[in-house]
Length: 150
Image (cartoon, rainbow, N blue to C red; front, side, top):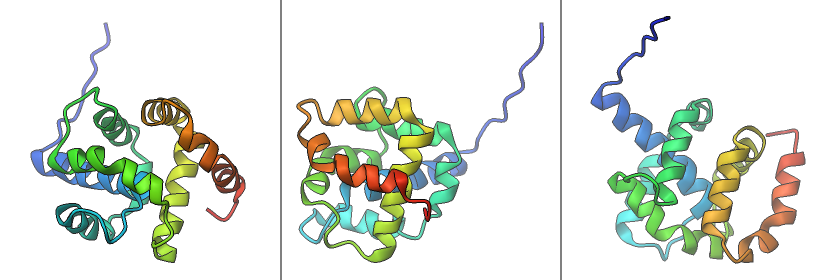
């Protein structure tokens, strides 16, 4: 039998990965505006500087936050804030987002849709059981997926 060797991550690496993946879902699903709770605003401010490419290139990070948000795994403090407030961001959209934030949201959505279809579907079905948001965002998502500049 072949032996499988796995590198164990340090607590610092785990913490960094958790912060990075939270940025993905904060920007992609929440687009939180000024009316959000102060503690979440502070988290978002810290997360805006995170390199989204690092997150999008790591399936395990994406998976851990999807499972947190849908309630299949325990959440970090930041993950819980995301889980508790995603609806507000989806309802409001990204009207108050900067151009850079909008670009990140689009990049994340496109990546999830094209490269993580199972997780995208799981997240969509879990967070939109009645199809309310699907109807609202279908055209927007199609435009993002077809955008070759992302």
